[in-house]
Image (cartoon, rainbow, N blue to C red; front, side, top):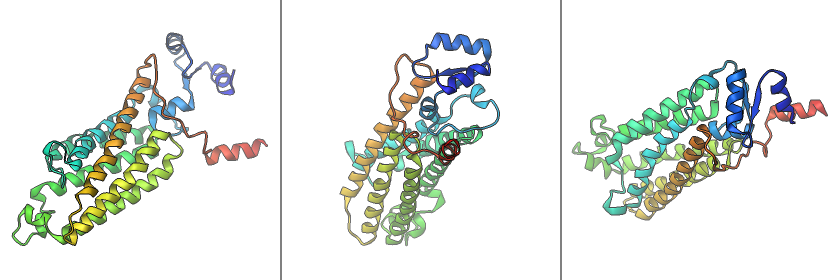
Length: 281
C-alpha cells in the first residue's frame, strides 16, 4: 500500500484512485466521512495541482471548473464559425453573439473563477476570471451604446467606426496582450494536463492571427484568410475544451469509464516537492 493510503487509513480516512471500487468507496465515506483522492484525479477535476488548503469546502460544495469551461465554450464555439464565415455568418466581429458573451462567457466564467478562488485554486481562478473579463469587454465593445466603435467614426455610426484605421490598430493592441497573457498561462499550465496546455498553445497564435488581420485592416489591406485561420485554430480549441468538460463531468459523477487528459504535474515537479526530496536525501 502506498504512503498516501497508509496515511489516510491511519487517520480514519481512505484513498480513492481510478482503480478503487465506487461502491466500496462510497460505503467508506459514509462510515468515516474522510476521503483522499489521487493527485491525478484531483488535477483532472480542478485543472490545478493538488495544494494544501484549510477547511473542508471541497467535500461540501460542487466543482466550479466545468461551469467556467461551459461558459467559455458556448461563447467561443459560435465565434469560431463566425470567424471562418461558415453558412454565410459574419466573420468580422461576431456581434450576433453579444448576449452569449455576457450570459455565458462573462457570468459563467466569473462564477467558476470565484468558486475556484474560494476553493484555493489560484491558477484556474485567475484564468477564468480574466477570461470572464475578456468576454465582458468584448461584448461591451460591440454594444453600440458604449460608443467604443462609433467614437472612431466621423459620422458617429458603428459601420464608420469599423472602417477606421485608428479603431482597428487600437483593437489589435488589446489582442496582442491577450496573446501575451495566454502565453504566460501556457507556461503555468505545464504543471496541469496536456489538454489544458494545448488549449493555451493554440490560443496564442489565434490572437496573433486576429492581431495581424486588424493591423492589416488599419492599412486598408483586408486579409480574410487570417480570420479563417483564427477560426480554425479556435475550432480545435473548442474540440479540446468540450473533451475536457466531458472528462471532468465523467469523473465528477464517478462514471464507469474516464477520458484521459494526460496529467503533467509529475513531469515538472513543484518547488515544494524538490525541497522535500533534498531534505530527505
